[in-house]
Length: 317
Length: 261
Ligand SMILES: Nc1ncnc2c1ncn2[C@@H]1O[C@H](COP(=O)(O)OP(=O)(O)OP(=O)(O)O)[C@@H](O)[C@H]1O
Ligand SMILES: [Mg+2]
Image (tube, rainbow over all chains, first blue to last red; front, side):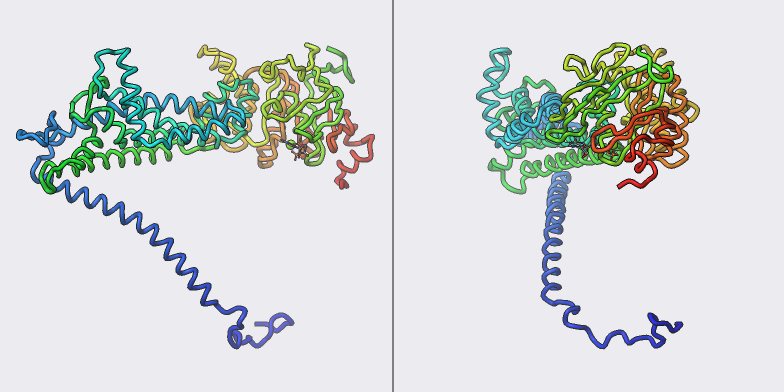
């Protein structure tokens, strides 16, 4: 080291100790550690619960599949676990789930998207401030209320149009389920559209586009990934919905894709068995784990699809 | 059209224009002529109202509540109509007066569809007609050579300078009479800037150009007329060489020579 005013020729000792003002404060240190620990355990807890659920489902399903071959589960066309001549064709429940979900999504996706476009691109500030809370309220109604609404209000109305419609049917349950899902689709799609930068809209208007052209040709494509996530969430809600179907669709397992028939879904079957008096450990009881696992795999599939769509159509503004 | 200075024709005229953002008086009795097939530059310090004036021409302010054209107007020739009159449809105005923004803002669509946008908006669906117009717009924006074999790629995949030329092609496709440029090169590197400047000089064969710029050299290089604005007022307007070499007002001279503020 060369000697100079600012570079002393003798290296200075690295302090003769630590002054009080600079020393690590034990109290702060401990507090930080405790908070970090709490945050970690919260995160770890949710991971643990997820793993525990999967573990239970897989373990119990394993017991089920030791008795019932997977091929029967997948390809049998009857679901009669409680009969002497038991059949375990999940297809039967799946058809109810798919049919009711399809009806619900046919309502929720178009209406939810239209509402989102309206709120994001057309509605003035005031309208939006009033409409959004109502929309959120729609999503907050307990599903059991929707179920009774379907059974005691919508079905009778539908019966005046189709007199042959049974009192329990997938159509009515699906339609009401669609109404329940609208807020999820609308709210998330609207968020995605509002996140589209104003500069893109200005670009469109500057070319002489109308509001509708701008909304449909520029804003919606620019928000694709967010809108796709909204749809996926809607699908997951439909597939997992239980109460509306248990109340309004009847719970008879029925291999059908005709929404005007009654039917059981995976979820409504699980409630039925869980609330029934089947002995634990019986093969009939074990079915609900296999059904639950199927549901979990479906939801997982949609989540992955949503993840993939988000990556595939990530916004590039 | 009325005759202007040096035998040029008037394309439009701003007359005693007042404009408010809510309660904020952003343009104060601004007047200026816009000459046909010429480049007119607007210069002035940040916040003086250049963009505000530019965006009056295509009624961009109509998109936001609270904005108010409060007197005077912009007369477009040969219609001899005030663009800001309540009975004028902003969409019709934008069909004839197009715009290129500061930051390139291509739509999340293919290069082809970006350029075709202004034609589709007008209801054009004929494939071969669209193809022709897209090609000539891309040629007009000096981009055709670079993108002719990748028209289906996303516009956002292009470089910044190419994106800006794509936006110029988009603005050109519908054959506008005036194109408004709001600091079109401020987000670009010097080489991309030079190519856009050259392009603007070529474009005045076809269209009338109004450009906002912060770059004095750019204004001097490419414009025929220059307006110097300050605090919402048009301080000085004239032939570019005059304004730069022999400004009439002290304020203009100070700004141009960098002795401003
Ligand atoms: N939307 C708005 N609401 C309220 N005031 C605004 C709005 N937009 C601009 N202004 C104000 O109007 C004045 C002029 O703004 P303008 O954007 O036209 O300036 P400019 O000359 O283009 O500046 P720059 O060179 O920074 O782009 C500024 O004082 C600005 O703060
Ligand atoms: Mg500006």
